Length: 382
Image 1 (cartoon, rainbow, N blue to C red):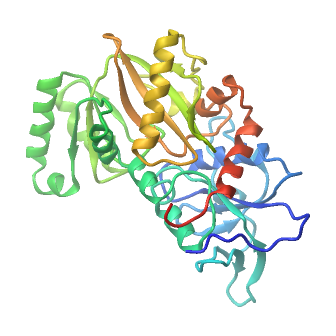
Image 2 (image 1 turned 180 degrees about the vertical axis):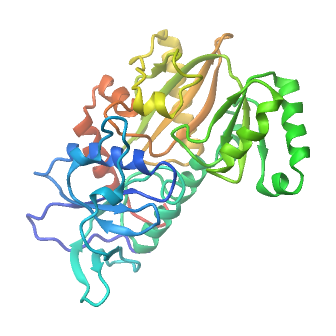
């Protein structure tokens, strides 16, 4: 697998393709995140090529216009709104050593848009954050920001994430998985199994898509009668669901960045209870701007402990580049890891950049660090 860089003139700036949007239910948040990154990239150091993936999977050239990529008056943006006129498609290289991006339109000669040195994949959810895009870029030999195929897949699938953490001795909370075949073949049996789980661990329960983020499709339920609707809501986003018991405690998050000498953790943040929402759901995160506390009001010992756990989670899942690790600090003083996010949000109110800013790394410096880390890293087995 080739990892050579494309020939450049001595004064050429690295070209960054910012890829965003996608087919998942997190399409809009990906657009918002990419807008913030486009706004922060230092144009004196990098050339930038924005590429949007529409909700039906078409790769399109888009306007380099971050202002049109923000949430405005509670309305969510989309790639379709900012795609350049025309029906052509953007095509990435699929052969090692070739990094030119081509624009192809029916009835016209394909247009070479030039080489790309690194991809910044600002995709959230399936079909982008889950290892699929990472696999394409590995085949092409193009460097990219963030984790590789395995870590991206593990970070997307909450079941296997927890299995990996357990195997490395990291503490996780009680959970139950309902696979598509079980639900389709024996719905009553699956509901009974969830009810038995509640009998063992107590109500309320959280019913979630196993492979989604941004709190999409999650329901907090307090009685068995609410289960069927909650399962169906989760299955709108993913046919496999995961059920988790309530972990009573403080919600603590911690960022991890890869440096040349290894991963380091940021100062942690705390997500306080949101009185207007049942839990830290999509609207609380992105619409109503629930405030996290940065840094979290923890003791020095607690801070050190959660930072060490975050780095252990990063290493356990073979992550690269960056991760946000989410924990619960229980009443007994022990931390339980809830999940990791291999491509956390970069919106202006997102916790990952806020935690690193409190740790001395500004937003533009964070974006630059991620790009430089990706440019140094070879593709292929490593």
